[in-house]
Every structure is written in C-alpha cells, then in structure tokens.
Length: 293
Image (cartoon, rainbow, N blue to C red; front, side):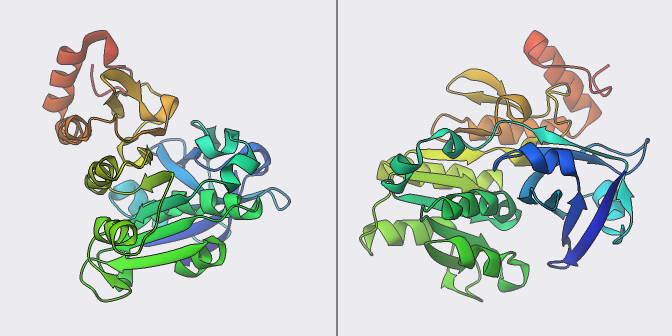
C-alpha cells in the first residue's frame, strides 16, 4: 500500500497529493509517469510525476477530476492509501540525457497549459538544480485555475503568466505571449518544450515552426492504459506509428500529427469507435484493453 502523506486542493477540481513510494522516488526522472489504482477493481490512472524527494521517498502527483475514477480519487484523504502505485514509466525528458554544460549554453522556453504545468515543473526544477535557467510561459483560462505559480517562480529563470480572459498576468493565449517575447521583446530560443492540452500544443508547434524553434511536446493527455496495450495513445510522428506511453511521452512536436491524434481520441471514446479503429489499424492498433474484443 502507498500512503497519502499530504493532500491539497489547488482549484475546484485539481488536487495535489504527496505519496509514499520509495522505490519510485529512488529512480524516477523528470518526464516520467506512474500508474495508480485505488483498489483491486479500480481503474488504472496514468499520472505524470510532478515532483519527487529521493531522501523522503515520496512522489508528488497532480490530477484533475475528469470522470468517476478521479472523482473517487479526490475523496481520498491523508492517511488513506493507493493499492497500486507503479513506476517510473515512460522515457525521461530528453534534457536528462544532455550534457549539463551544453544545456547551460541553450536558451530554453517551456510553455505550460493548465494541468500541463504539473509535468513542466519537475523539468524546470531539475534544470534549476543543475544551474540551468529556463524561461516559462504558464497559461490558464482564468486566474482561479492557475496552479503551482509560486513553485514555478522559484525555479524559473523568467516566469510569464498569461490568462485567456486577461484576469491575471498577460492577456491572451500562450502563443501570443511566446510570439510577443520573440518578435516584440527580442527574446531568442534554441528549444521550446510544450506540455498542455492537445489543441494548445498543436498551435504552439505551428508558431514555433514559423519561428524556427525546435519543439518537444509531451503527449500525456492521450494516455489511458499506460502500457501500450490499449492503443489509446497511438499517434503518428513523422508518418510512423508511435505510442505515447511506451515510446514517449515526449516527441518532436513538429512531426506529430495533432489533427489525426485529436480525431482519433474522439473516436476512441465509444465502443463502436474503438471497434472501427481496431479494424482500420490492424496489427498496429495494439489491442488488449478488453474494450476492443
């Protein structure tokens, strides 16, 4: 059992938990995720690791209520425990494999949208701990759903907060702030790392392609099973079939077919849609979730 040591309500439907998971904390790196399950009959929920403390043996997760399972998860309290807490899964951030001195010479900007701020934070924190400054653009629809602002401010080189409705920080989409930084304020970037809703990542990548900025995206939003079995996170990257949970979750954003991925996600939500995808995709579908048979 994996005990919940701390619980915090970040917004009306976004929660943060610190969980005792010593083996996961011992070896995890930024960019990886865990699969949690509340009981033997519970749904498997993939969640990106938001933070970790190797000495204390803890993992911090952030999740949003999107269905029955996450609603029940939000009702767990400190002292309760998860039945399963499996990880670390997925590939670590590409940054973890680069030479630190090379990273110090790169100008990096992160673009975080909504709950995507949670997986951005450990990467920025890791860079900060290794002496690398990175700019961060944090976006939300309005001020009341911004998360981790103080935590991000403590580790970012420069933090730019923007809200769609202009209720806090800069006004407008994250793409507007990024474009303003480059075209109006003279910023230059060697790399952009973008994590958030699929539609946001699509338009950030469209902009960075025009600006000539290499871009990495994390396709956490399309993961369901977390093991490559169910086929939910099947995506085309440069025309090749990839699975976010086993091949990613990070990919070259300029090669991801976002339109195909978003259309596929809508189709995957129904039994008839899953059956059609299995028929269309054949051996590249990755069956095994129980829904496709």
